[in-house]
Length: 91
Image (cartoon, rainbow, N blue to C red; front, side, top):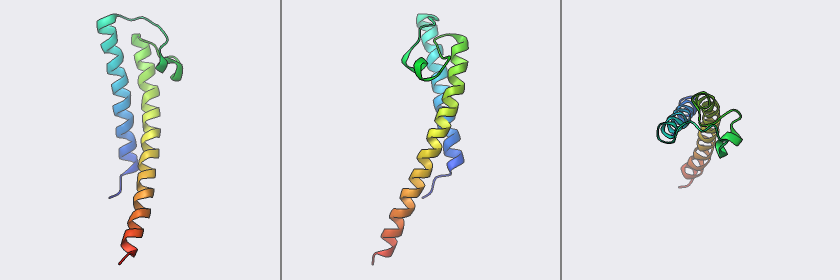
């Protein structure tokens, strides 16, 4: 079975982006907007636990998740094709 690279990449980007966005608002709701630089803030420039930071994180995570999902789907298809060729060639 092959993965649709575009669909898988978009799904990964949306899940990661919305997940980070929702997590940021969850922290804001229970602890308040701190503006502290977090570990993710060191990776995603401009991200912080603030309303504006949640939008910045959403954009970064959308791009990051899309690229990561595309690489994963391509690698999965590549490995699946190579292993199915070997199993089909064996009697």
